[in-house]
Length: 174
Image 1 (tube, rainbow, N blue to C red):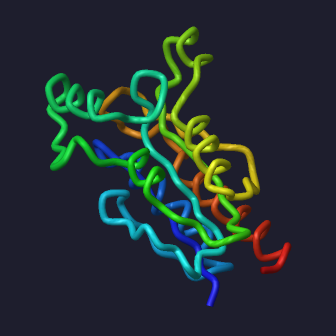
Image 2: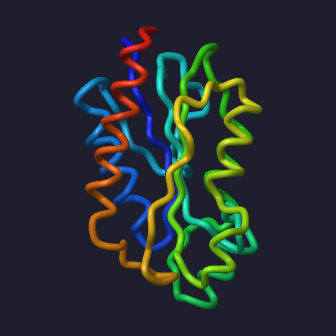
Image 3: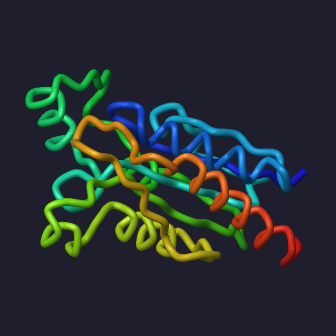
């Protein structure tokens, strides 16, 4: 049976909260699993919709260096800084005709920096490289500071976005 999978990387828990809210929205249309990138399977035989998301680090997806920086600078607890969403996307194999979407979490200040590249843009590029069809533009969710919390209303917005993704994918059929 076709299903959805939401794979995330989270450092302080905010991106995980968004991932779970997106999955709640999708669940009205498709069975859905939510999994941390470090635990995610790399063979996805029955996945119809793949949604990926992570925090923005240094204007892009987290890397081993930025994960180590989060540990040193902000006291993040990361079991294995060498593994995250980017590394999982490098290893995963998608079934043909997989629909996909990407999101990130980011601060909305300072304004100049918010205009630069962010994690979701790279996530989309990697998904396209895997042969996935992007069903919606990447979504961005706001955290108030590097360690959070989420801006008020972001989890509700994530749930609504997940619902829209589920409707888009199921309306198009398998």
